[in-house]
Length: 228
Image (cartoon, rainbow, N blue to C red):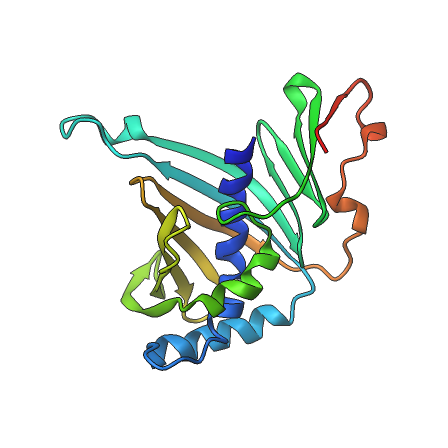
């Protein structure tokens, strides 16, 4: 369960990361990258919340050079809803609810929900973690500019020097015209790569607080495993 939380916490991270990396005005940052991040920041700050459909590719290191790459790639599709420190992630086999204090991991097929206190660590965090990440000396620069599906995009590479983290770098691809994040790639130290492709994105002005809380009454017969 912790692994799943970390995977989707990272997704929440890359969705929101431009807000706070752009505010780190330390010497040595790429000026062009900083200006682009600031524009994206201004766009996203206007949203009260963000909802997105995504495709997640998990690329594991190959055991043998001659192995087919496809053997080491897993694909997930789902939706995520973010509002401050709260989030909800839905994929085929599970749903994760977090109100910032408690986290529920619901597996419909097993009719079971696991309840935990949401405790942040270096690798498991909510979007609120982003408020401190930018203070840790992260560096960013323009990595490349390319055309994707006919759209001009800029890829910004963000180096994360905090050696306690399981990942060391994040690439964020931004649509130059819409100023939206369209893809992010997280580089883990063990060689695994998480590639998040945002297939649809929107913002809403009215999301009820209970959208981030699992209600057993709405799921008759569910087994609640309370580990708080």
